[in-house]
Length: 335
Image 1 (tube, helix red, strand yellow):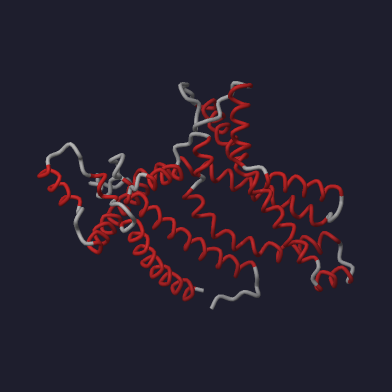
Image 2 (cartoon, one colour; image 1 turned 180 degrees about the vertical axis):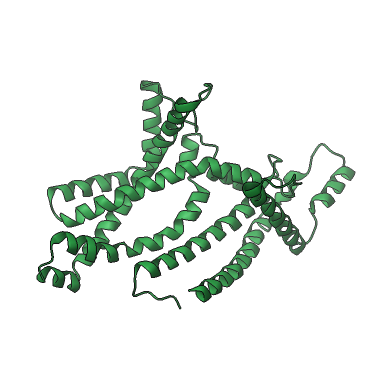
């Protein structure tokens, strides 16, 4: 196990190196020049030339790459130090082209805003999907199963953003309830009132965002459960006289849940990225919306930093899911 993890970490390092090169080149060599936004058009030509030299506007791509990732890891170390130990005052190397604010500290703050929304959404999706999917599989072709199927397809068919817009309009116009932003604007709350207000503002977008995901995952859980229930060893367990709960919840549920262990690899990057659509609809100043706007404004430092960190979290998630899969399934051996 230890040797496997070491080999995987080395492979992850090589993969991240390739990702760092490709992501930087794709953004830096795309049409137009992202560095141009740093130049002040009101300054004289001489001042512009000095500014071009200061930001490395005319440097070779390789030099820009080395400078960027040198500054990136320098700032990343400072952010980690501040999160876990306070750290000393740091002169931030990477600043966004548009807002002129430090990239990595801002990214950390945006992630903390996005995190509650994504965590609650993920929790709701997985909490609803498994029991409903298993219940539907165990009562195949029953009235309950068909009702669940119709509801799931309806939720998949209706776009989540459309349901969100209808709900926001209804709650704000008809019921006069605040639902946008992470907290009620213009009101100072503390103690229990602040907690319930924050919970309300997280719960509404999280539940709406989880509807389509829960519907899709419920169908997937049902399909996996039905596939396992048709296996020979399940029929053998029934023929031996084992009670239904033992057959379904001990012998069938565990192998049916194995594919979902591999899906855990996507949780880490999803917690990092958030949802652009729902952050825009509910006016959440989160990470997904911030990165999306940076793409359109060609903010090189934000885009490349986000790509690198998102790739690193994806690789870490894959490693964790592989380890968990070997623990959950004795047939899997890491080698």
